[in-house]
Image (cartoon, rainbow, N blue to C red; front, side):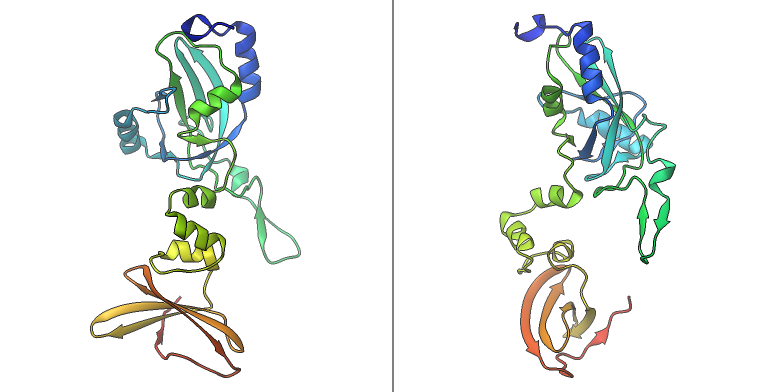
Length: 250
């Protein structure tokens, strides 16, 4: 097989790419703006930040980090391979993504819902090549889109974990809380607390999240300016109480 610009896509190969890539789902790895004109992305993974920023200011986001998007059309424009995302600028979340279906349980299910949140809008992204479109497989084109779209369909949580320090990621995966974590990390590690308390001392306001209740293990997590400054564990008997502060209104 020829390499470089001489190995151009044939009509058959183009039809094959459309079959393999159209309707594919991916997860946004960066904030993607809505745009009437295709947003340029180079095969190296670099994109025109000025163009993307301008589109974001003018039209707002098509997808936030972690949002689920779908390739809804593919077109070949000279040296560009254009991917329509969520039906373009006029597309986005569909009516069935908002319908709640309730069963015998108290919790409803959203039709079409995945682990990811559906993106609020649509746009177009164009892979721009220096010469004519080269012959590449669908997997190779997906790899080129990887800096902005993840086709492994990982959740927003997994994408977030990729961006934080290894020590925090390890703690979250072990369901532990350590000093330096922010509230979002604590929620990922432990879920919602049983109680939230606020304390004022010497003009300094701290917030405590309490996990567990008597009898059993109680975990106090203290925040200052949104970051964990102390983690305290204790065992309380039935009727036991530790720390008296005003409870935060929820």
